[in-house]
Image (tube, rainbow, N blue to C red; front, side, top):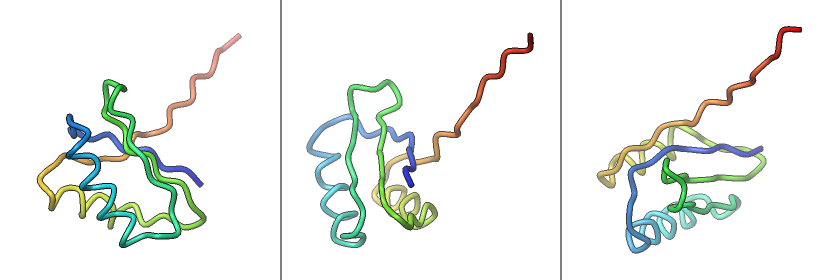
Length: 77
């Protein structure tokens, strides 16, 4: 399972602090940031992802964090 979150984390040093914190709490998850993306993406991979806990932790650290919703585009022929 993969979850993608939108954040407002701008700097690598900020991302690293959050990353270390999340990895200590969720060692079973693969977690990384894509700060080059316009949404400052936080990507989490694992068998079981507690979305609410991740959002809460990032928000308590002073940043915005919300789930990037999947959107499927269907062509009507």
